[in-house]
Amino acid sequence: MLRPELPVSRSLSSIADQVGAIAPDLDLDILGMTNVSSEIEEGDLFLAFAGKKVHGASYWKEAKALGARAVLTDAAGALLVQDFPTVVVADPRRSSGNLSSWFYGEPMRDMFSVGITGTNGKTTTSTLLYQMWSYVGREAGLIGTVETRIGRDG
Image (cartoon, rainbow, N blue to C red; front, top):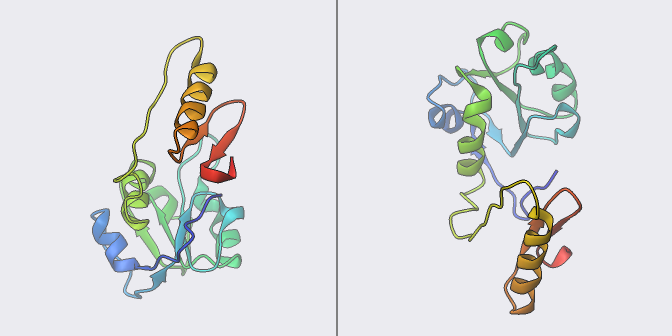
């Protein structure tokens, strides 16, 4: 999982405010977030979504053991979490995109991006654009089915 180079810290109460929820009585500093329990790092918020077969909140103990400080989930997920700071929202999956953008300082705000859709030619088109922008000195990224290149690491 990609993480910002510079550390980020937000209070759990400000996160709850951002998603229109009530924060637990205990306010904590949150240092990151992920919805993959095995990728939790110390200080993270675990985003627990309902799945087709298993609710993500059922992995809260694993997330806690890896250093999660709180869980953001829906009402059904909150029933699975015991004695652990939990922020409850109606639709955590829907809330997570805007929350992540706000949490990490809106990284797309100053970034030009292009999305390519269609049946054929997406990989070719995206690779050509990446190569053209790189050739003229623009820092470029490429995410596709064949490869992922990010900035100069590509």
